[in-house]
Amino acid sequence: MKTRVKVVPNSKTEEVVKEGELLVVRVKEPAREGKANRAVIKAVAKHFGVPQDSVRISSGLSGRNKVIEIVWL
Image 1 (tube, helix red, strand yellow):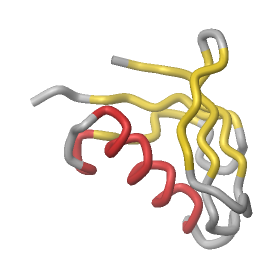
Image 2 (cartoon, rainbow, N blue to C red):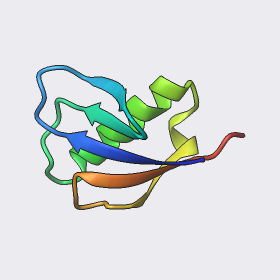
Image 3 (cartoon, rainbow, N blue to C red):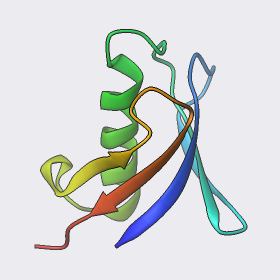
Image 4 (cartoon, rainbow, N blue to C red):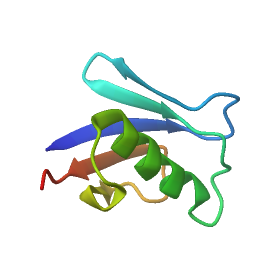
C-alpha cells in the first residue's frame, strides 16, 4: 500500500493524523541527518501496527511531502 504523507518536524507532539487523502505525521526530531525520516517510519509503523522494516519511504527523502510504502507481510 502506498500513501502520501506530509511531515512536520520539530513538533511538540508526535502523532499521525488523517487529513483527507493525506496523512500528516508530526515528529519531535529535526529534519537533519535522517532523524525525522527515521521518526516518520517509526510513527507510521506504530499507527498501522506493522514492524518498522515493513515501512519505507518511496519518494521525498529530502522534502516534507513523501510517499510511504507499507508492505504487509
